[in-house]
Image (cartoon, rainbow, N blue to C red; front, side, top):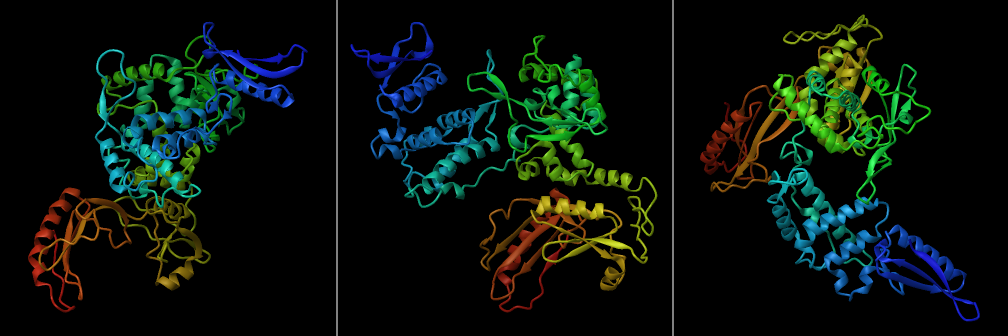
Length: 610
């Protein structure tokens, strides 16, 4: 341990304070020392420095220059050297506040591994070194980089895969953060950040966030998997994880002190603890991942029973772990549980309890929890808060695609709950699928629930639940807010000529695929206005929208009106393969027609349907 030693002259007067320690703390470590003044200020400074040495593991504190104190690393270099990207980035993260030390180390590690080899010696100010082409080329090389899955095995070759789009986006964000600091520097070192122009791979290009497929297990599949676990403690952990959607670091840190209102009919778990890296190769208990990660979630009877089997409330040992890795109550390592989980997956597949094409990980219990909530009609905001996502965008990007697929199940669940008892006067339950929709008759005092969309379009519903769910789905897909209003049915009828258009159930939706429009000049030269004209695109359309269709594929070719001389072709429909075939026909027709573009407007458009 470092210590402070007062240095005295022959008269016994303290002339200085010296901090001494052995480098690295080893008995045979080289002696190190730093000198401070002999007055009270020097004594105080020596004490602070001594604590810094101890905190640094008996090493010189980062950024300290012997005899001078804490110095900006960049200031020790010549003026031009401080603008070298590696030097600039290291100095930026060295003084960055508001982040954990582990995150700081992770950023430096990623920079050293993937960014410095390309840009380390480049000038942060140079538009030749940092521009759209150089950044885009670097991203392209990352797409071709192979990384191993999980930890490298001690023996044999690791399993390799291309770097995931999410990892590439994270690395690109790291580069962008450094360049943005140069833009915002005083005075500015750059006029703009070229990363803003980069075309990045989509995070769903490889099927899931993080580069590995997300497996959504049904309740029956999850129950089958749990039954194949050999240890009762593993079964209980999976029940709690699936029933709460907690992250691994959160559920493995669960303790009796997290139980809230446990003896009431509304028991809850307060997620306030999680395992965190301590920066020294180990782990410690700390707060959850983010501010929204600190949350309170209601739990079901199954979760309560599982916790009770583990001991439930414990006033004598409120901090004890429910899930441990040994008899001494130490942390349960993820790798230990993962190995046992994988054995249960293999047994479940062999027993026919889990489809052979699904290979879930423990984290998929959290994903499956979210899928159940969405399939039962819960909104994204509810799921976001329950899972502890900092941003609704994270929830949307990860689970948004489930909403369209879950529509049928969600509607059935809502119907069961809404029409379980007596039907409100004047409103009939929705017709069964395949039958004509029921129309609710008008009566004095009845109201309709109106969804007002951006642009002023309105759709009316007899049930508020249906209107609200439509609004939630619209907000997810279009990033636009739908306003809900309650109006007298008589007023709606008078304005719209009756109540036949009021939705008694959820309106129809269709996933429509589209290719084009591609645009050709009179000489047959292609003049596409959008870069993805030849890429098939999918979007969900409601029955009242112009893009809604139930046809497998349709196509059209049209001359654009004068003064334009262009001809455009487009194909769309609900069958992707049929749309691709229709697009071929549309383009061939457009190429035959483009030379005959009329010199004046008014000629009818040629069309074709498949």
